Length: 113
Image 1 (cartoon, rainbow, N blue to C red):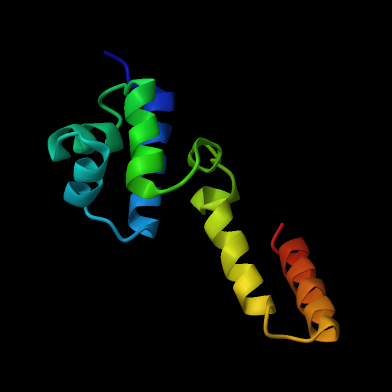
Image 2 (image 1 turned 135 degrees about the vertical axis):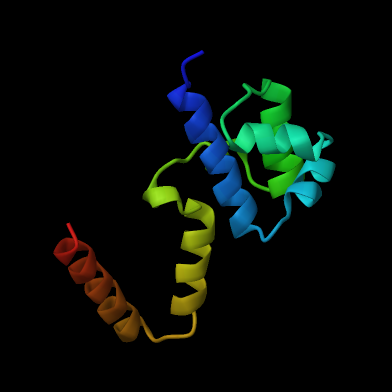
């Protein structure tokens, strides 16, 4: 049977979010009420989960909304976590420093494209 690229992408996303949450497969599986073996199969793109399993993984295990769970952007980074980190870093600076930081980030992103 041919590999399904969507199953593989979903499995990678689950692994990325689990790693970002510093969770083991056993911890996530327990929180989502599935077996670690099934989670391993999911992460490797070998099985196709039900909507209920996806919801349990996202909301019960990873503590993210389904919209964050299915956000495959930002090169695999969790958009909510990234936004939170940027907000945290900029919260202790003056408005003028914040403008400079955003300008530097904009320049950096332009250079790397």
